[in-house]
Amino acid sequence: MTPAGPNERGGTLVGVGVGPGDPRLLTLRALDELRRADRVIAPCVAPDTAGRAEGIVRSAAPELAIERLTFDMGPDRDASHQAAAEQLLAPLDAGERVAFVTLGDPNIYSTFSALTTAVRERRPGLEIETVPGIMAFQELAARADTVLLDGTESLHLVTALEGPAGVEAALEDLDAAVIVYKGGRHLPAIADALGRSGRLDGAVFGELLGLPGERICGVGDAGDNPATYLATVIVPPKRRSR
Image 1 (tube, rainbow, N blue to C red):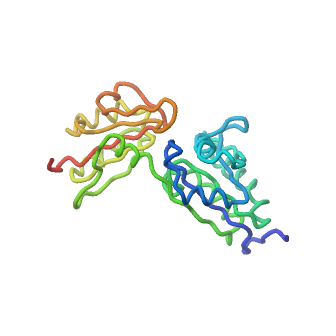
Image 2: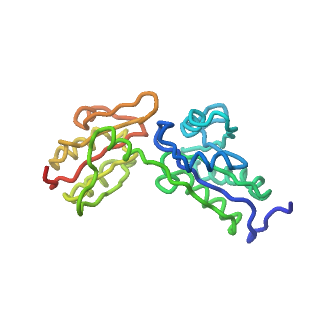
Image 3: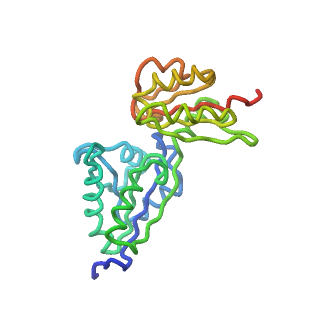
C-alpha cells in the first residue's frame, strides 16, 4: 500500500478511555474497540515499565497484545508527543486501525489530545475517533455516596497543577459542584481554601481509584499532606437543601 499523503486518509487512530483504574469500569464498547483494532498502543514513561492504562486493559482482556509508546511528561513533553506521533505514522499509513488507551476519557485532560494534534500536523486527512471512558470523579462520587448534581445545579471541573487559585475562583459559585483534578501536591492548600470558603464539610477526596494505594476519605481527613498526581476532590454545591 502506498503511504498516505498529507491530504489522504490512511488508517484510523482511536482514543479509547479505560476508566480510572478498576478494570470492571472498562466499558463493553471500549473492549469491543480494542479487540477489533489492528494494533493497541499504551502510553508509558519507559519501555520496560507498564503504564496504568495498560495495566487496566491487561486485567480486563489479557489476550490482547499491547505495544508501548513512551512519553516524557517533563519539560520535553512537546518533543515527546512529536516523536510518538512519528512512530504511529507507519501503521496508520498502512491502513491499520490503531487504538490508543488512556486513563479516564480521551477528550478530558488526556495525552491523546496532544498526540492527535501532532499526528494531524503530519496527516491532516487522517480519521480520528474516540471512545468515551468513565472519569475518576464519577467513580469517586459513587464510592463516596455523594450526589454530584441535582436540579439546576452546575459543575466546575478545574485543575490545580499550579496551586489553588482556580479552585478558589470556582468555589465562589455556591450553586455549583467543584471537581479538582491534578492537585495532589497542593492538597493542603486546597483544603485550606475549602475551609476558608466554608465548603470543607462534605468535600471528599480520592486518589489512585481502583489501583494499588487507593484512598477515599473526607478532604479534612486527608488535607494535611500532599497526595499523588491521580488525586480527585469533589466539593458539592453549598446551597443545596438536604
